[in-house]
Length: 346
Length: 286
Image (cartoon, rainbow over all chains, first blue to last red; front, top):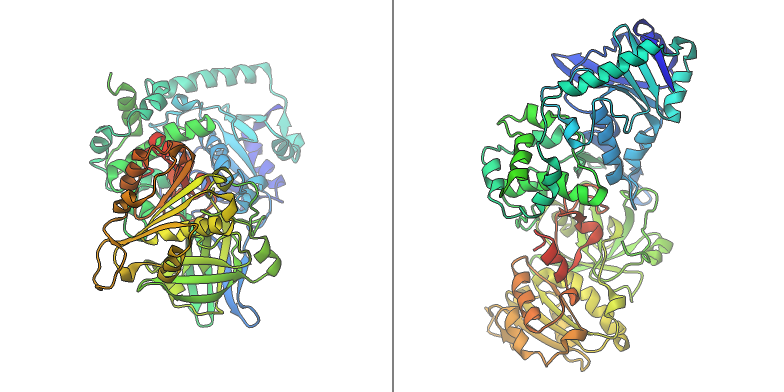
């Protein structure tokens, strides 16, 4: 379903969605972040890329998932804390970040369904905003089968046409959102459609960064386990882990207990994002570490995203958002690494 | 995932099930034996596992860690673990007494392919705490003795005082339907009556084997695998009949948290039992 929505009507639309929790990008001290919105007027869709992707709403950085406390009868009682199931809408989702959720879906699904992830995921509608202008100088979505107008994972896709948005509803969930304020949405004119096509065409041209030969990367990686490239490329790494913490597709987590009181016992079990770039990540309690150095950990990051995941799910585990490049304190650039991989031995 | 095995908690895989420590005692200075029973009797009996699988054990307040199951499914109801005191969770476990409550979830992992191992010769090579998972398959073979042909065990420990299940293995040595060779790297007691040397020095003592119908199993400290596998290969045992169970850091046990990822597989789902064939095709395994 294709519609247009006047920009000035946008807050009214959001108002009609009062039964939903609304999340949208908010600017805080020069940084953009997805936050819970109280008033529709808070939403400003002229934002650049957010620091974290909306993954943080579906799969929070820190999640208390069990509570435990001493009880008289059975000694210790363990209580399961499942996320509340109020429906949510996230506005202003970049197409790359929506696609990223379709990739984490694969991990959190399977034989053991992760209820914490899926309870939120199923209740959350994603309203995308296409990237007429790349939100980051390091955007490279076109390399990894994405596009500034990709609809993967989205329920609604909005495109900025100047004084109005072109609104495409893509799923049942998306239709419900648009239907809640039917009168605000108008049928697009021929001019609107032409405008959209023009903006889409131009947007692709504005993406300047790409991996020259991405198709060669997965087969090349297969032969590069022992390559000196990993040593060379990881030399400057300070193991801060920012590349993986900011990545919209990374899903690794740690599990720990936190004690509020030891007598009587009261505490919680939490899971927090973890990071394959840390030495601890694979270290056995005996001290043995099967991935003992920076080189093997960088190799793991690149291999997982561009070979193992491809082998398993036929997708790169990367959506080209460019966060890991922009924020790396020592300038490790995944595009440059992949270019070297594709040229390796040539 | 082994299809016949039912999980304890079907809806939420992260929820531990209360279990009681029935017996616990020291096997060596830093390794303790734990026998536990899931409190809910129905669940205790429906905890169906396969030798080589593992479980996540929780000590609330200290955390959760993966442990090989050392008991055999042929003796249902009670689960046994042998655990070395090395980290936060194991330190907390060592402070617990009989009748104390822990949490357990599982069983996880693939386990040994016992169906395929039927009517074959079984050669088990163990080093140190590698006994934990392989005791399960050894007892399973002995409990179902008529289903397997020759069963042999080569067991190595650093010192006599570090040999776990010492009485049990010395008793097994007396069995006529098991070929059992024990060794220690060094004897600081002067009382050791068996072999002295690393576990690979026991191979020449093995009676001649029929390689094509032998399954060879190994578990031990990381350094041991390459040397033992070399011996298996020398004996001409086929690559897909050389089985090993591997240790990895794990947090979730169900293929989400990423810690045990190797190549495109997860040790917790697709392992911890691998063949030598897997090792050749997947880097980083051993």
